[in-house]
Length: 82
Length: 231
Image (cartoon, rainbow over all chains, first blue to last red):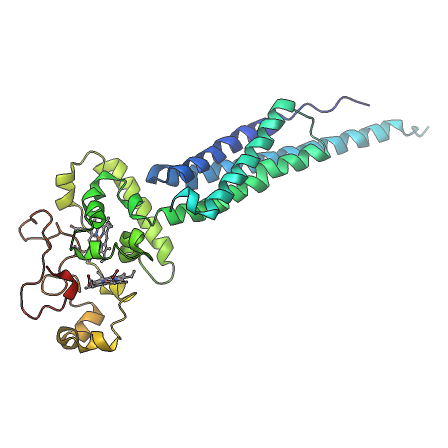
């Protein structure tokens, strides 16, 4: 078994952005004044969308690199033609 | 609407808590990306936050309709506190007392109706927030009373969303009968000095002397049709 790939830094970024976005939205719910509400609906949603995008991208990149690695291993295991 | 009374807000807060719990758990344990951590993260970073945004948006739109929200910028305090006052006889305050929309009276009278009405009104509201922070933030209340005006004359159409002008009793009122066309076409304002008075106590049309505080400009002639404005 090879070691698991390191936790993608992108996933960590996504986690932090999501926490910030959700935090903004919770603030606007508990304290519905103009600034929190406008901030939640603009910055909050922007951050949330960006962080989901980052996560999906990280998963995609991770799956791809596993696939590439697996194929490389298969290729190298196959006997070379003379 | 307070958080306690709104199921949507509770849904949004629950989604937020679940999302935060998953993320914090992930950050502490830091498991490698595998099938199960991917699914957990999909919920923590995708499904639940989208739930927060969805329920939170609807809740946010509702919150922006409340008079309390309008009154949270200090330049609107005179209007808002007039509506809050149970003794005020202004037209705006008299629309602040019923249970159905009394709490949302500013929005009920000032929202644009029709297609895209809500969106147009909300965009207009964003403009107000922007203007507030760029220009009106430090304007004293006394000055705001006389310098903040509507962009366009108030349209009777907004009153007519609720007062259809079709009711038999309404049509029997002599002044309504006499001015029916003008009222429906918006040539005579329902909220004008000779009719139902201005909606807000300190309002005067441009050019007239500034209002004395808290006096409702009740119509003075005897053909007064506005039963509720007495005394």
